[in-house]
Length: 130
Image (tube, rainbow, N blue to C red; front, side, top):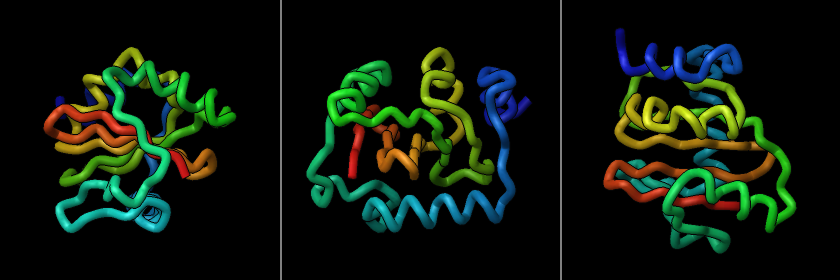
C-alpha cells in the first residue's frame, strides 16, 4: 500500500480524490493567491498575516480570530504524483501524520477561506491568511 493510499484510508469517507486537471487548477490557484519561491515554498515574506504553529490544532484559534469559518480544504503535495484531495480541516487533525507523509511538503489550502497551511519538510508549520 502506498503512502497516498494510507492517507486516503486514514481520512475515511469524508474525502474526495480529484482529477489531475483539477489538481493542476488548485495548484495554479494556490500560486495565484500565495507567491511561491523557485524551490516550491510559499514566499512568506510577502504574506502579512502569517503565523508559525507548533501543532495543526492551533489553526482554529487563528481562523476564529480572523472571522474565518470555512473548513473545506484541498490537500496538495509538492514533489509528488498524488492527486489533490478535497476534505475538511477537522478531518485531517487525527491523521495529520498520514497526510504529511504523502509528499515532502504539504499544503492545506482553502481557496474560499483564503488561507493555506504549509507543512515544510524541515518541520515548520505556517498558516497564511489573505
